[in-house]
Image (tube, rainbow over all chains, first blue to last red; front, side):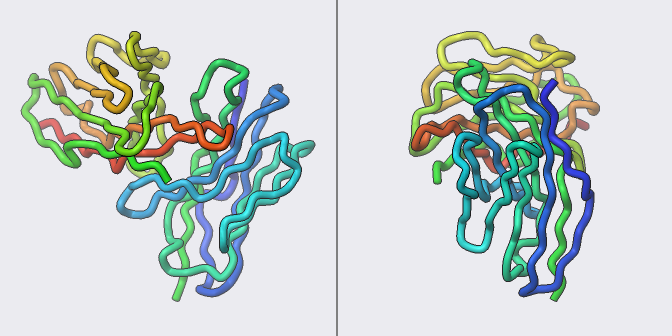
Length: 117
Length: 117
């Protein structure tokens, strides 16, 4: 069975500092996609970053970057220069991709991040 | 990024009535949409996959006669909670699948808070 694990239920970071959220997954698929979504208090799910498994280069989006370790099945999110607006719940998600015929996401349980002023 | 709207954002109804929630992809066509339920401080629980022009695929344990899904066009899916009861009170979120640069990504609506009295 495919699973996604986020082992850090809660984290905090000082404003302007860097924080890393961890995510591990389990799959037998060779090609798949990984995502980080942010859910602020408004509860709107916002795509932060995505990674295609066949790409070795780690994805980056401004202050957000990932450390994708395919062999270790690890997909951590690094937030640099943390801002108060980064306070949110962060979900890691996995989908096996189009070759499997399913587009469903498997979500982790989330990490609640609080940025401190 | 792609935009998904959801209506209504909040609804309060009496026990035994039915409630319809609409999910629209505003700037793209979505052959596949998803309906989730989210309990407080929990992850998203997939209820069903909605495919345009065909029957929805429900996850195990989700009553298809209670949660009716219709995906009549490439931009609209609806979820009808029939004969709602207080235990159906929850936050319901839809998403729409978009294909961007060879990657399937889900974009989420802002959610609907349902309260059944």
